[in-house]
Length: 595
Image (cartoon, one colour):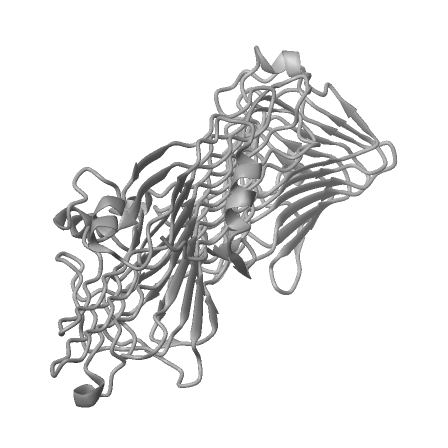
């Protein structure tokens, strides 16, 4: 067979078939090549791409060769459809010393909107066939990245609203189910040889504070950020694989597997304050909600790096419920970091995704009023409870082979870096200078005033404040690699938005002020591994017990700041929470402790 009949260089455009020169100055369109009706399949007797030559193809394209496939040049794939780019040899061998790269159509590195990353797939169907990768000078196989999910702006609330999941990255696949895959003896090129695509970013979900309304019968609202897309995978499918690298070999080789990052989870956020740049204040918009939950999206799993969990952020500090109605409790939970899944080759270094951060300023209680004048109730409403929890760091799964591995860090009360809500200035304006936006309880309402010898109303208590840093991700113990657990999440700035308790109302017998029933700060546990990850820190647990005790308030503050460096943390927190009732999985309501 002469060289002209071996070389096929075709570039598919929407308008038809464009013929390119390849190699010599002679035209290089093979007379034995044929396109099918939709121009997505090319059938040839053999396929040869010489060194120094570049060919471009669309995605969802298949080259089927009856004989050998030899690729010494570069193939570039422009993603325009969901399907893979595939090369098949039916009765020959496949030898690749060049590269195959899925291009990014946008500078941001994202694929066409809504698409999964494009797979690269090399298939040898011959009995005793070979896929030979032993001569890579600067070879690399780069699959497409998954598309980011769109963000979701909420105008009309329902019980549960979730943003979309990021799209998965593309796979790098070699199939020789009746033969042998031959890998190079070493990999020394700076670019990893195999690069499955990264997962797309999960969508953020954000309340439009200017237009938002709730359904008339709904009293709970849950917002969930979109999960990050999983990364693509490396697939080596053959009964015989030669030159599999060892862990020791990775100490001298450059990384064999790259990219493979799970997509970050999306944020969930609601700015329910009156003014994000000043102190929160009451305003006219009221809601019938009794419980509000925001969850960051989970990070996508990956082969090299798990995606980070999304943040969960709520900012109020105002009265959002009508007088006499229950004040809405708030729970914010960061998304979990993505795990590291197995790969057919050992990875040089892998890292579980970090858990998402969390931050909240709770809802204030409404003021009491004179029942004879305004219909009451006389006592001020209690501030809403707030609970915050960091996302868990991603784990490295048991069947992963690695040289070095790190569990993801647990999520912190440091969500000020959230792209959708920044409220540090509000905290600073209320005496929290140098404190990060953490888990902040809002006060109860003032008691109503009465005249004519009647007693004034009692002030409403602060809501309960609880915060827990996310647990660090874990790494398998006792493997040939070096595994370190992730750091536990920090608990910062857990306490109250104002330092004074709610005031009792005026009257011949003034009403009592009131304080919170409890402030609980629990830093996250470090993850397990050959080296256990450090526990989180607790910094800035702030409360006003002396002020409350002197005022004769109805309840005193009970504060628990747990140091997770001791081995009795689990029992301690269990005993603490046995004083309360379970509200929902992972959330407890502490009972007030009388003086």
